Image 1 (cartoon, rainbow, N blue to C red):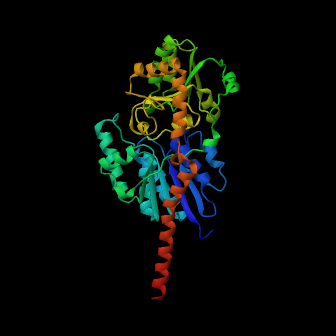
Image 2: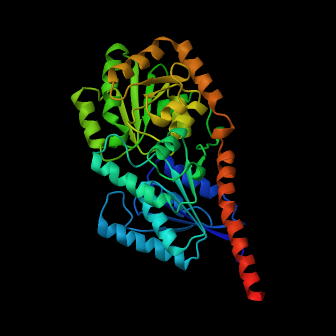
Image 3: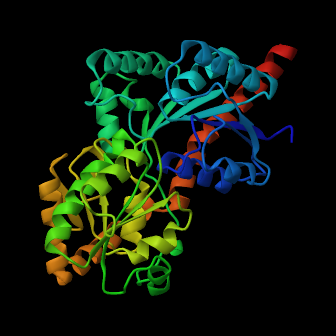
Length: 395
Protein backbone atom coordinates (compact mmCIF):
# COMPACT_ATOMS: atom_id res chain seq x y z
CA UNK A 1 0.00 0.00 0.00
CA UNK A 2 2.87 2.39 0.85
CA UNK A 3 4.22 2.22 -2.69
CA UNK A 4 0.91 2.89 -4.37
CA UNK A 5 0.10 6.21 -6.00
CA UNK A 6 -2.75 8.08 -4.33
CA UNK A 7 -4.93 9.39 -7.15
CA UNK A 8 -7.85 11.80 -6.69
CA UNK A 9 -10.46 12.48 -9.36
CA UNK A 10 -12.65 15.57 -8.87
CA UNK A 11 -15.84 16.39 -10.79
CA UNK A 12 -18.53 18.93 -9.93
CA UNK A 13 -21.68 16.85 -10.31
CA UNK A 14 -22.34 13.17 -11.02
CA UNK A 15 -25.15 13.71 -13.51
CA UNK A 16 -25.61 11.37 -16.44
CA UNK A 17 -23.28 13.08 -18.89
CA UNK A 18 -20.27 12.30 -21.04
CA UNK A 19 -17.70 13.78 -18.66
CA UNK A 20 -19.14 11.86 -15.71
CA UNK A 21 -19.47 8.53 -17.53
CA UNK A 22 -15.95 8.83 -18.91
CA UNK A 23 -14.53 9.64 -15.47
CA UNK A 24 -16.23 6.67 -13.80
CA UNK A 25 -15.15 4.35 -16.62
CA UNK A 26 -11.59 5.59 -16.22
CA UNK A 27 -11.70 4.90 -12.48
CA UNK A 28 -13.01 1.37 -13.06
CA UNK A 29 -10.25 0.68 -15.58
CA UNK A 30 -7.31 1.78 -13.42
CA UNK A 31 -5.00 -0.86 -11.96
CA UNK A 32 -5.77 -1.13 -8.22
CA UNK A 33 -2.31 -2.62 -7.67
CA UNK A 34 -0.82 0.72 -8.74
CA UNK A 35 -3.37 3.27 -7.57
CA UNK A 36 -5.36 4.05 -4.45
CA UNK A 37 -8.20 5.90 -6.15
CA UNK A 38 -10.38 8.58 -4.59
CA UNK A 39 -13.28 10.63 -5.98
CA UNK A 40 -14.65 13.99 -4.87
CA UNK A 41 -17.93 15.30 -6.22
CA UNK A 42 -21.01 17.25 -5.20
CA UNK A 43 -23.83 15.41 -3.47
CA UNK A 44 -26.30 15.54 -6.38
CA UNK A 45 -26.58 13.41 -9.49
CA UNK A 46 -28.01 10.12 -10.71
CA UNK A 47 -24.53 8.56 -10.88
CA UNK A 48 -23.74 9.01 -7.16
CA UNK A 49 -24.90 5.46 -6.40
CA UNK A 50 -22.83 4.14 -9.31
CA UNK A 51 -19.73 5.80 -7.91
CA UNK A 52 -20.35 4.45 -4.41
CA UNK A 53 -20.68 0.94 -5.86
CA UNK A 54 -17.22 0.92 -7.53
CA UNK A 55 -14.97 -1.52 -5.64
CA UNK A 56 -12.03 0.00 -3.73
CA UNK A 57 -13.02 3.56 -4.72
CA UNK A 58 -13.12 5.97 -1.78
CA UNK A 59 -15.81 8.59 -2.43
CA UNK A 60 -16.13 11.97 -0.73
CA UNK A 61 -19.31 13.94 -1.46
CA UNK A 62 -18.97 17.65 -0.68
CA UNK A 63 -22.27 19.56 -0.39
CA UNK A 64 -20.54 22.90 -1.05
CA UNK A 65 -19.31 21.79 -4.50
CA UNK A 66 -21.95 23.15 -6.87
CA UNK A 67 -22.03 24.39 -10.43
CA UNK A 68 -23.37 27.87 -9.67
CA UNK A 69 -20.97 30.56 -8.45
CA UNK A 70 -21.37 31.24 -4.72
CA UNK A 71 -18.29 32.76 -3.13
CA UNK A 72 -19.05 31.42 0.38
CA UNK A 73 -19.82 27.86 -0.77
CA UNK A 74 -16.89 27.91 -3.20
CA UNK A 75 -14.45 28.85 -0.44
CA UNK A 76 -15.80 26.06 1.77
CA UNK A 77 -15.50 23.61 -1.12
CA UNK A 78 -11.91 24.74 -1.75
CA UNK A 79 -10.98 24.24 1.90
CA UNK A 80 -12.68 20.84 2.00
CA UNK A 81 -10.78 19.65 -1.07
CA UNK A 82 -7.50 21.02 0.31
CA UNK A 83 -8.03 19.22 3.61
CA UNK A 84 -8.88 15.97 1.80
CA UNK A 85 -5.72 16.13 -0.33
CA UNK A 86 -3.52 16.80 2.69
CA UNK A 87 -5.06 14.19 4.98
CA UNK A 88 -4.98 11.45 2.33
CA UNK A 89 -1.49 12.35 1.04
CA UNK A 90 -2.74 12.60 -2.54
CA UNK A 91 -0.05 12.36 -5.22
CA UNK A 92 -2.13 13.08 -8.35
CA UNK A 93 -5.14 15.36 -8.63
CA UNK A 94 -7.13 14.98 -11.86
CA UNK A 95 -9.98 17.46 -12.24
CA UNK A 96 -12.93 17.44 -14.63
CA UNK A 97 -15.42 20.20 -15.56
CA UNK A 98 -14.98 23.93 -15.04
CA UNK A 99 -15.94 24.51 -11.38
CA UNK A 100 -14.16 21.40 -10.08
CA UNK A 101 -11.26 22.24 -12.39
CA UNK A 102 -10.73 25.68 -10.86
CA UNK A 103 -11.28 24.80 -7.19
CA UNK A 104 -9.61 21.39 -7.41
CA UNK A 105 -6.44 22.64 -9.04
CA UNK A 106 -6.12 25.56 -6.62
CA UNK A 107 -6.52 23.17 -3.68
CA UNK A 108 -4.02 20.74 -5.24
CA UNK A 109 -1.43 23.48 -5.66
CA UNK A 110 -1.87 24.70 -2.09
CA UNK A 111 -1.69 21.14 -0.76
CA UNK A 112 1.46 20.30 -2.71
CA UNK A 113 0.17 17.53 -4.99
CA UNK A 114 2.95 16.04 -7.12
CA UNK A 115 0.97 16.07 -10.36
CA UNK A 116 -2.02 18.21 -11.37
CA UNK A 117 -4.03 17.14 -14.42
CA UNK A 118 -7.18 18.67 -15.87
CA UNK A 119 -9.48 17.35 -18.57
CA UNK A 120 -11.36 19.86 -20.71
CA UNK A 121 -14.71 18.28 -21.56
CA UNK A 122 -15.59 21.49 -23.41
CA UNK A 123 -14.52 24.87 -21.97
CA UNK A 124 -16.71 26.63 -19.42
CA UNK A 125 -16.69 29.84 -21.49
CA UNK A 126 -18.64 30.13 -24.73
CA UNK A 127 -20.36 32.58 -27.08
CA UNK A 128 -23.73 32.36 -25.32
CA UNK A 129 -22.42 34.03 -22.15
CA UNK A 130 -22.24 37.75 -21.53
CA UNK A 131 -18.81 39.22 -22.15
CA UNK A 132 -17.89 39.88 -18.51
CA UNK A 133 -18.71 36.32 -17.43
CA UNK A 134 -16.79 34.89 -20.36
CA UNK A 135 -13.70 37.02 -19.64
CA UNK A 136 -13.88 36.11 -15.95
CA UNK A 137 -13.79 32.37 -16.76
CA UNK A 138 -10.93 32.82 -19.23
CA UNK A 139 -8.84 34.69 -16.64
CA UNK A 140 -9.45 31.96 -14.06
CA UNK A 141 -8.44 29.28 -16.57
CA UNK A 142 -5.25 31.19 -17.40
CA UNK A 143 -4.32 31.42 -13.72
CA UNK A 144 -4.81 27.74 -12.87
CA UNK A 145 -3.16 26.62 -16.12
CA UNK A 146 0.10 28.03 -14.75
CA UNK A 147 0.30 25.22 -12.18
CA UNK A 148 -1.42 22.49 -14.20
CA UNK A 149 1.09 19.88 -15.38
CA UNK A 150 -1.08 18.43 -18.15
CA UNK A 151 -4.29 19.64 -19.81
CA UNK A 152 -6.15 16.83 -21.52
CA UNK A 153 -8.61 17.81 -24.24
CA UNK A 154 -11.09 15.51 -25.97
CA UNK A 155 -11.09 17.59 -29.17
CA UNK A 156 -8.53 19.43 -31.26
CA UNK A 157 -10.95 22.36 -31.26
CA UNK A 158 -10.64 22.80 -27.49
CA UNK A 159 -6.85 22.74 -27.67
CA UNK A 160 -6.93 25.48 -30.30
CA UNK A 161 -9.49 27.45 -28.29
CA UNK A 162 -7.39 27.20 -25.13
CA UNK A 163 -4.23 28.36 -26.89
CA UNK A 164 -6.12 31.14 -28.67
CA UNK A 165 -7.21 32.44 -25.25
CA UNK A 166 -3.67 32.09 -23.85
CA UNK A 167 -4.59 29.29 -21.47
CA UNK A 168 -1.40 27.33 -20.87
CA UNK A 169 1.17 26.55 -23.54
CA UNK A 170 1.13 23.96 -26.31
CA UNK A 171 3.43 21.56 -24.44
CA UNK A 172 0.89 21.15 -21.63
CA UNK A 173 -1.91 19.89 -23.90
CA UNK A 174 -2.64 16.26 -24.76
CA UNK A 175 -5.41 15.09 -27.08
CA UNK A 176 -7.13 12.04 -25.61
CA UNK A 177 -10.48 11.22 -27.20
CA UNK A 178 -13.29 9.63 -25.24
CA UNK A 179 -13.14 5.88 -25.53
CA UNK A 180 -16.07 3.48 -25.43
CA UNK A 181 -16.38 -0.28 -25.33
CA UNK A 182 -17.84 -0.87 -28.77
CA UNK A 183 -18.74 -4.46 -28.01
CA UNK A 184 -21.51 -3.19 -25.70
CA UNK A 185 -23.39 -1.90 -28.73
CA UNK A 186 -24.82 -3.72 -31.71
CA UNK A 187 -25.96 -2.63 -35.15
CA UNK A 188 -29.21 -4.58 -35.23
CA UNK A 189 -32.69 -3.28 -34.46
CA UNK A 190 -34.18 -3.97 -31.07
CA UNK A 191 -37.81 -4.78 -31.85
CA UNK A 192 -38.58 -6.01 -28.36
CA UNK A 193 -37.46 -2.73 -26.80
CA UNK A 194 -39.52 -0.77 -29.33
CA UNK A 195 -42.54 -2.84 -28.30
CA UNK A 196 -41.74 -2.10 -24.66
CA UNK A 197 -41.94 1.61 -25.52
CA UNK A 198 -45.27 1.07 -27.29
CA UNK A 199 -43.80 1.71 -30.73
CA UNK A 200 -44.51 -0.12 -33.97
CA UNK A 201 -41.62 -1.66 -35.89
CA UNK A 202 -42.49 0.58 -38.86
CA UNK A 203 -42.34 3.83 -36.92
CA UNK A 204 -39.52 6.13 -37.98
CA UNK A 205 -37.81 6.80 -34.67
CA UNK A 206 -35.75 9.95 -34.10
CA UNK A 207 -34.05 10.31 -30.74
CA UNK A 208 -32.09 12.76 -28.66
CA UNK A 209 -30.05 11.74 -25.60
CA UNK A 210 -29.06 14.79 -23.55
CA UNK A 211 -29.59 16.75 -20.39
CA UNK A 212 -32.45 19.28 -20.58
CA UNK A 213 -30.40 22.45 -20.18
CA UNK A 214 -29.50 25.57 -22.15
CA UNK A 215 -26.40 24.01 -23.67
CA UNK A 216 -28.39 21.19 -25.29
CA UNK A 217 -31.21 23.50 -26.52
CA UNK A 218 -33.95 20.82 -26.41
CA UNK A 219 -36.54 23.23 -27.80
CA UNK A 220 -34.75 23.19 -31.17
CA UNK A 221 -35.25 19.43 -31.39
CA UNK A 222 -38.95 19.83 -30.60
CA UNK A 223 -39.43 22.61 -33.17
CA UNK A 224 -37.72 20.50 -35.83
CA UNK A 225 -39.91 17.56 -34.85
CA UNK A 226 -43.01 19.65 -35.55
CA UNK A 227 -41.87 20.22 -39.13
CA UNK A 228 -40.94 16.56 -39.59
CA UNK A 229 -44.24 15.28 -38.18
CA UNK A 230 -46.22 17.33 -40.69
CA UNK A 231 -44.57 15.48 -43.60
CA UNK A 232 -43.76 12.11 -42.03
CA UNK A 233 -46.84 10.67 -40.31
CA UNK A 234 -44.91 7.61 -39.08
CA UNK A 235 -42.28 9.73 -37.33
CA UNK A 236 -41.93 9.33 -33.56
CA UNK A 237 -39.54 11.14 -31.25
CA UNK A 238 -37.92 10.14 -27.99
CA UNK A 239 -35.92 12.29 -25.60
CA UNK A 240 -33.70 10.61 -23.03
CA UNK A 241 -32.63 12.84 -20.17
CA UNK A 242 -33.81 15.27 -17.54
CA UNK A 243 -32.91 18.70 -16.24
CA UNK A 244 -34.04 22.24 -15.57
CA UNK A 245 -35.67 22.73 -18.99
CA UNK A 246 -37.75 19.56 -18.98
CA UNK A 247 -40.86 21.43 -17.83
CA UNK A 248 -40.51 23.96 -20.65
CA UNK A 249 -39.89 21.19 -23.15
CA UNK A 250 -43.04 19.36 -22.04
CA UNK A 251 -45.05 22.56 -22.34
CA UNK A 252 -43.72 23.24 -25.85
CA UNK A 253 -44.65 19.70 -26.94
CA UNK A 254 -48.15 20.36 -25.63
CA UNK A 255 -48.40 23.76 -27.36
CA UNK A 256 -47.42 22.19 -30.69
CA UNK A 257 -49.91 19.31 -30.21
CA UNK A 258 -47.15 16.71 -30.40
CA UNK A 259 -48.10 14.69 -27.30
CA UNK A 260 -48.84 11.57 -29.38
CA UNK A 261 -45.49 11.88 -31.18
CA UNK A 262 -43.13 12.22 -28.21
CA UNK A 263 -41.83 9.94 -25.48
CA UNK A 264 -39.91 11.64 -22.67
CA UNK A 265 -38.04 8.77 -21.04
CA UNK A 266 -36.13 10.66 -18.34
CA UNK A 267 -32.68 9.42 -17.34
CA UNK A 268 -31.95 5.97 -18.70
CA UNK A 269 -29.01 3.67 -18.01
CA UNK A 270 -29.73 1.21 -20.82
CA UNK A 271 -28.48 3.30 -23.75
CA UNK A 272 -27.00 0.15 -25.42
CA UNK A 273 -30.59 -1.09 -25.64
CA UNK A 274 -32.15 2.21 -26.67
CA UNK A 275 -29.67 3.27 -29.35
CA UNK A 276 -30.29 0.31 -31.71
CA UNK A 277 -34.01 1.23 -31.69
CA UNK A 278 -33.36 4.60 -33.29
CA UNK A 279 -33.29 5.36 -36.98
CA UNK A 280 -31.47 8.68 -36.43
CA UNK A 281 -29.75 10.36 -33.50
CA UNK A 282 -30.19 14.12 -33.24
CA UNK A 283 -28.31 16.51 -30.95
CA UNK A 284 -29.09 20.23 -30.82
CA UNK A 285 -26.27 21.41 -28.53
CA UNK A 286 -25.16 25.02 -28.90
CA UNK A 287 -21.64 24.24 -27.61
CA UNK A 288 -19.92 20.93 -26.95
CA UNK A 289 -16.75 19.05 -26.17
CA UNK A 290 -17.08 15.62 -27.74
CA UNK A 291 -20.50 14.02 -27.19
CA UNK A 292 -20.09 10.40 -26.09
CA UNK A 293 -23.59 9.79 -27.43
CA UNK A 294 -22.18 10.32 -30.95
CA UNK A 295 -19.74 7.46 -30.42
CA UNK A 296 -22.54 5.26 -29.12
CA UNK A 297 -24.74 6.05 -32.12
CA UNK A 298 -21.89 5.38 -34.53
CA UNK A 299 -21.11 2.08 -32.80
CA UNK A 300 -24.72 1.14 -33.63
CA UNK A 301 -24.32 2.38 -37.22
CA UNK A 302 -26.80 5.23 -36.77
CA UNK A 303 -26.50 8.48 -38.75
CA UNK A 304 -26.32 11.72 -36.78
CA UNK A 305 -27.98 15.07 -37.41
CA UNK A 306 -26.56 17.86 -35.26
CA UNK A 307 -25.57 21.49 -35.05
CA UNK A 308 -22.39 22.53 -36.84
CA UNK A 309 -20.31 23.44 -33.78
CA UNK A 310 -16.86 22.88 -32.25
CA UNK A 311 -16.18 19.22 -31.43
CA UNK A 312 -19.18 17.97 -33.43
CA UNK A 313 -17.24 18.66 -36.62
CA UNK A 314 -14.44 16.31 -35.56
CA UNK A 315 -16.71 13.27 -35.39
CA UNK A 316 -19.62 14.04 -37.74
CA UNK A 317 -18.55 14.64 -41.33
CA UNK A 318 -21.31 16.48 -43.12
CA UNK A 319 -22.98 14.41 -45.83
CA UNK A 320 -20.78 11.40 -44.99
CA UNK A 321 -21.84 9.90 -41.67
CA UNK A 322 -24.51 12.48 -40.89
CA UNK A 323 -25.53 16.08 -41.38
CA UNK A 324 -24.43 19.29 -39.67
CA UNK A 325 -26.67 22.36 -39.76
CA UNK A 326 -26.40 25.91 -38.51
CA UNK A 327 -27.34 26.24 -34.81
CA UNK A 328 -30.96 27.22 -34.17
CA UNK A 329 -31.99 26.41 -37.75
CA UNK A 330 -34.71 23.90 -36.93
CA UNK A 331 -35.99 24.07 -40.52
CA UNK A 332 -32.66 22.75 -41.82
CA UNK A 333 -32.61 20.17 -39.04
CA UNK A 334 -36.03 18.92 -40.12
CA UNK A 335 -35.00 18.89 -43.78
CA UNK A 336 -32.04 16.56 -43.09
CA UNK A 337 -34.18 14.21 -41.02
CA UNK A 338 -36.79 14.03 -43.78
CA UNK A 339 -34.07 13.43 -46.38
CA UNK A 340 -32.88 10.38 -44.46
CA UNK A 341 -36.45 9.16 -44.04
CA UNK A 342 -36.98 9.30 -47.79
CA UNK A 343 -33.62 7.77 -48.69
CA UNK A 344 -33.12 4.64 -46.56
CA UNK A 345 -30.13 3.65 -48.63
CA UNK A 346 -28.38 6.88 -47.70
CA UNK A 347 -29.40 6.35 -44.07
CA UNK A 348 -27.82 2.90 -43.96
CA UNK A 349 -24.71 4.06 -45.86
CA UNK A 350 -24.14 6.93 -43.42
CA UNK A 351 -24.50 4.55 -40.49
CA UNK A 352 -21.92 2.16 -41.92
CA UNK A 353 -19.48 5.00 -42.59
CA UNK A 354 -19.98 6.31 -39.08
CA UNK A 355 -19.11 2.96 -37.54
CA UNK A 356 -15.95 2.86 -39.67
CA UNK A 357 -14.82 6.20 -38.17
CA UNK A 358 -14.57 4.60 -34.71
CA UNK A 359 -10.94 3.54 -34.88
CA UNK A 360 -8.60 2.83 -31.95
CA UNK A 361 -8.55 6.51 -30.99
CA UNK A 362 -12.09 6.06 -29.67
CA UNK A 363 -11.44 2.77 -27.91
CA UNK A 364 -11.67 2.68 -24.12
CA UNK A 365 -8.39 0.80 -23.66
CA UNK A 366 -6.59 3.40 -25.78
CA UNK A 367 -8.00 6.23 -23.65
CA UNK A 368 -7.00 4.38 -20.48
CA UNK A 369 -3.45 3.73 -21.70
CA UNK A 370 -2.82 7.36 -22.69
CA UNK A 371 -4.20 8.68 -19.41
CA UNK A 372 -2.16 6.17 -17.38
CA UNK A 373 0.91 7.32 -19.28
CA UNK A 374 0.32 10.84 -17.98
CA UNK A 375 -0.20 9.54 -14.43
CA UNK A 376 3.15 7.75 -14.62
CA UNK A 377 4.81 11.17 -14.41
CA UNK A 378 3.80 11.31 -10.75
CA UNK A 379 5.46 7.98 -10.03
CA UNK A 380 8.64 9.25 -11.73
CA UNK A 381 8.58 12.40 -9.61
CA UNK A 382 7.95 10.36 -6.48
CA UNK A 383 11.06 8.27 -7.21
CA UNK A 384 13.10 11.40 -7.92
CA UNK A 385 12.06 12.92 -4.59
CA UNK A 386 12.92 9.67 -2.77
CA UNK A 387 16.37 9.58 -4.41
CA UNK A 388 17.03 13.22 -3.55
CA UNK A 389 16.00 12.63 0.06
CA UNK A 390 18.36 9.66 0.24
CA UNK A 391 21.16 11.74 -1.30
CA UNK A 392 20.81 14.63 1.18
CA UNK A 393 20.51 12.22 4.09
CA UNK A 394 24.00 10.81 3.48
CA UNK A 395 25.73 13.61 1.64
